Amino acid sequence: MNKKILIGLLLSSINYLTSAFSIVSLPMLRTPTKISATSLRMTNHNVTDVNTIFGKLNTRRDLLAAAVATSLSAIKTEPVKASKADDLWTQHKGPFTEDLLKDFTKTSSGLLYKDISQGRGPSPNDGDAVTINMVGYIYESGEKWSNTYKGIPAYQSVVRAGARENQKFMKGLNEGVANMQRGAKRILVIPAYLAYNYVVIYSQNDPSQIIIPGGAALVCYVEVVDFKKLS
Image (cartoon, rainbow, N blue to C red; front, side):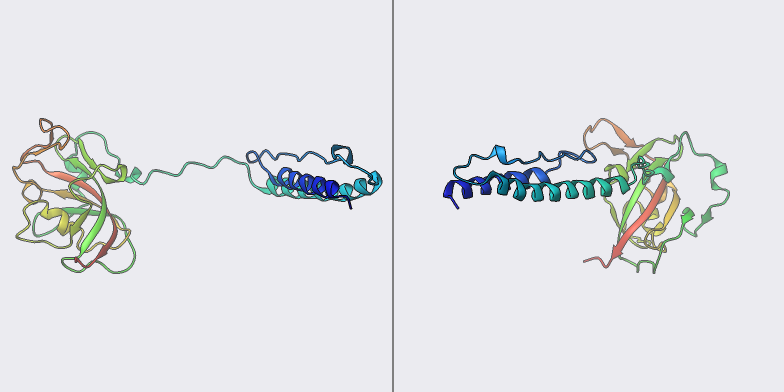
């Protein structure tokens, strides 16, 4: 076979494959352009033979396009409903009231808690590092001061399980996660003396902005993500 014809066949085959397998964007399928013998520059070659060769290729192309189109039509095109935000269970508006505390459990330290959902497996050992998500509110005003679901940390997203006398701040948070399981969700009402006491917490970005006033009780919506021994 003439060398020029071989080169022409090779280039056309590459163009065919590129055309046959290219997709612009789903679910719109690009239909490859049919190949004809007249698109080749040939010398001293039987055009009928070339038409036969590319007729077979075009048949395969059409079968491929039909198969892909059938597969695409089998895919459900119904819009996917947006999943609920992870922090949806933590939403609250306005100041908290005494009515909220009716079905809470009170510990000997004065911490109050209410379980929203149970987790799975064991609870952390005393002193374990517990990774949490937390949304924090000021009890008196209902103002939100933290939301780790949205990337707004409290001070850390990892706390130590169990009450610690030498802990300076947020003793109630450490106590509150001590008997929770992975995936468990709980609301904590932390008196000021188990939170930041009379220390005023200012914004790191704006030192003049008060995030938590002194003597504030806190409400913390806590989800335990994981825990492990503190290294």
